[in-house]
Image (cartoon, rainbow, N blue to C red; front, side, top):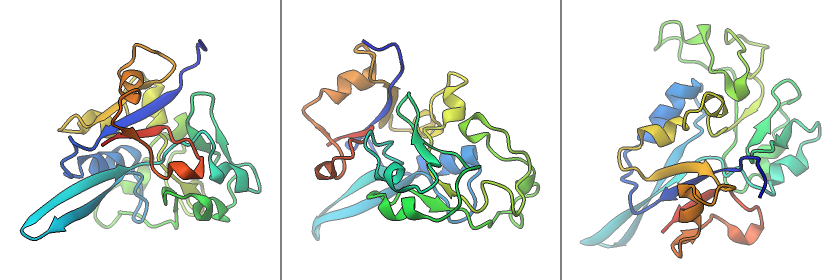
Length: 213
């Protein structure tokens, strides 16, 4: 067995209550600008009134093992880390957005340079250290403005031995995070459940976000 970690996330849809705490925590942790939301929750209504139910589907980046976004990047700004996370090198990214078009999950966003400075004092003074890099102030002409952005499994938190923010705050304990290379980890055991499915399996992207139905 490899000693390298292979990070994965398991989301139990029977526990998700659609509260959007993951969405809020993600924006706060990663200080994403307007129009950039790494974690969304899609809600689908099923049935016919009055027998109606709702199903909530959280959708972060799938961190695919066979990511189409990597294949189409003309400058190799998108690449796979050994731990399974799909990363973006903001210093190489030219903002062509080919990766956004190729992502079958709609999990990538372009940073147009918008901000919350009118709603939040000092918003531009500090950025989240995405991929472990401190970029200082948020300024026009400086990455990640003009780059494509996406969920990183809170890579900077993983480096500190912490869980992704969305996992930590989930009030229903619907999210699990861990190392697929560790057969004793919770995610490894849950990944063997007969309830398991992944989004758009037929596309062969081999997502690292696994769902329990």
